[in-house]
Length: 318
Ligand SMILES: [Mn+2]
Picture (tube, rainbow, N blue to C red):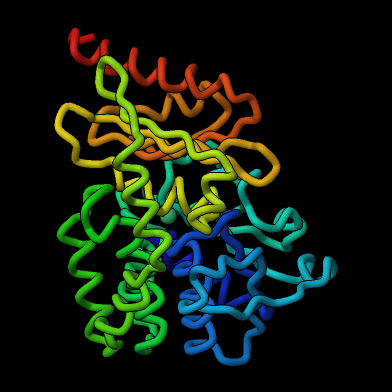
């Protein structure tokens, strides 16, 4: 595809490249950032590739080394932003200082930014887009790069369960696996969890509530999260699947309170479109998987109510 060639041409043309991704990085953000860095290093070893953003210690097994980047370096660099739908979420506000900026993403392209934009919302993960780009251009890849990118796909697709993986997704995953990384070891890193988190699971199951039309929801204040030694982000985001697959509960939300009192809401559905509720309240995301952040506790009822109304309309066939 032309656009893919154009992106790699830009990479070839630039001596310095900076790779960025969204705040509060997940497996996919890491997969894109560390994966692309390694691929560029393998294929064009004389290029200087840097990555920045706040680390997520939970993902230390994927990569730990981030670079200190001076402001002046941006002006000389090609900046590639992956897995990030809008500029406010980019985890380095200096992105716009880049000599040239490329956006590569799989979220709906609500806020197009950059000089080159490659958005494919039919892909499960930005890491899947990356795998496809590498394979279609026949680039060099090794087991470590394959592992990092595979991890991005497997986490963002909820272990190939959500966001509708395509035959292509499995093909790419198979191709990555062929590169020879140890899948068993990777899954061990991915699945092993502290005992507090097992207790947390039990707490969520015991305490969630449901609205009349089937919105499951739970609020986790910061004191509660401390008991389980969990960050708000991890509780709301990584554990969003806890309330999935409940009969007659097509929509679910986890509200988790950050240290500063802000509430992080992660909204999920098994099919009904819900991202309008996130957008109406200052958030955003995918049709069936989106998030909001707000300070006002009463907003929780507003969000639950709007989601409940969405389900009511759905039932009445509107
Ligand atoms: Mn993603």
